[in-house]
Amino acid sequence: MSAFNPLALLWLLVAVPAILLLYLLKRRRRDQVVSSVLLWQRLVQDVQADTPFQKLRRNLLLLLQLLLVLLLAAALARPFLRVRALGGKNMAILIDASASMRATDVPGSRFEEARRLALRMVDGMGRGDAALVILVAGQARALCPLTSDRNVLRRALERMRPTDTATNPREAILLAASLLAQRRDAQIFLLSDGAFAALDGAEGAGIPLGSARLRFVRIGHRGDNVGLTALDVRRSLGGTFDYQAFAQVRNFSEQRRRLTLELYREDSLIDARELTLSPGETHGEVFGIQGSASDLLRARLDVADDLAADNQAALVLQPRRQVNVLLVTAGNLFLEKALNVDPRVSLAKTAPGAAAATAAPRYDLVVLDGKAPERLPPRGRYLFIGTGGAAAPVAITGRTEHPSFLDWDRRHPVTRFLDLSSVQIARALVARPLPWGQALAQSEAGPLLVAGEKEGLRSLYIGFDLTESDLPLRVAFPILLANAIDWLMGSDAGTASLQARTGDVVPTEVPAGVRRLTVVHPDGSRHALAVEQSPLFFAATEQAGIYRFEGRRKEGPFTTRLAVNLLNEAESDIRPRDQVRLGSASIAAVDAHSQRVPREVWRWLALVGLGVMALEWFAYHRRL
Image (cartoon, rainbow, N blue to C red):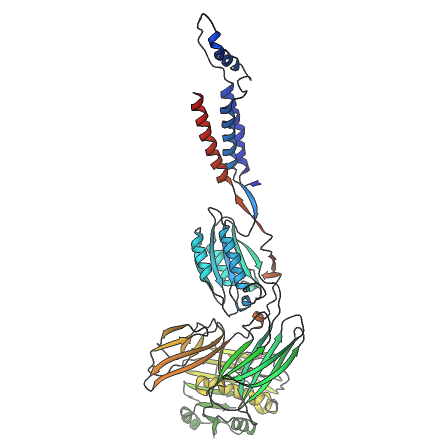
């Protein structure tokens, strides 16, 4: 046993001698002559007891008073015992609710294990202890404020639910640190498997915690999982298939795994591939798909592992739509043929000049090769190749010789599926992206690909003349043009598929005149949305699966579908981490079953002291 205030025991040095001194003081008596002392034996014994150091013998009141002083002094010292539990005086309980916490390597799931542990922490709170609960997923949500009411904390823990999103606990830790500011003995408990990136603040620094202490409580035992990490589809540029689907699988476990990758169109199995993956191996498969209806395409892994959320993914195929393209060029056979190969494109061609600017509003997309006409319409969709202009997302600042692609964004719709590492360029423009432009590919002298969008304008910039590079001779060229058309046209292009990642905000097109939608979530729950604009930005994508948007227009009811997938390697890698990074520091995981916390026992000592006081009062009055 230890004490929070051991100096309180010094009261014993004052109170005990004071009580003893009162008992040692001699009483003053009046002399009285009597005829006999035979009947006064008790009085004589009492007189003998009044002599120094004799009256302390066998005195119950003295013992009770000394015991009372001892108990009160011990209670003031605030003694405590260390018990096996997690907790503290003021604590924030952060529970990871991301997709990896659905792993079933512990009874129920990791999320359920974290909830059980948090409930034990709440049940073990002492009087005066306070706690708050924060759910950590795509966004941090405080489920209850700092409170000592254990019933409020239990209700908050019982109503929380896991999600299929990725997680970054940084916001949750900052929120907890701010709520615990100026609190004594503040501790932040992060209950997680640690499947997230390093927790960095500004410029790579650690997260400011103030006076609080962060403790990482690891949940989970193993990482036996195989997951889908990519699923996408593109329209075939030739051949017998209308679409090509690409699925990527990775083995995150430490054992060699055999599995079947199945591809479904709606509920019909159209293909299956047997795979054998070594530990850590990634494998991709390409499937050919015929037909152009708006069907649901679903990939599924037939495998038994610890995480089911990444064993399937889906997308909604989109039918083709004709795109009217105006090519403004002095002559470029490579570009003209590449555009004609795309079955969506209806191509018209004109020479640079004022006539091109006049004709531009009549076309869905304008491709400007080498020279852009002046006074282009401020709204529209433009592809600038080796030139700039008022509608371009860049400002041209000069020229450079022999640039090369250093890096490019592999996730942007324009540059996905591309390999630009060996493209040779003789000359290129040097450009600076405008505030509304996003650089997609970089060279030594600046960006070579820039995309931008603002106020009805969407444009893409390619910073070199195609005839001064070998890009038209590479497989990446038709893919780049197809991606560019898809992105520039957006929803009007009839993109190859509709899909999103969990946690994304998804723009959803709504037919004109519709003012209310009903959203059916993958778990079957429904809720209504008011439509104020189109596209409608839908953010409640925490579950993986198929969302249905139902509504009614003048022509009758309509339904659209949206596929939302996990497809996140960090969440599929469910191996529990032994530590997490906080800036440049590492925080080692603690074992929830080996930790000890102080529990004060002064209230019990005070209660015993109250009983001793009552006994002393009873003994005194009985003696009288």
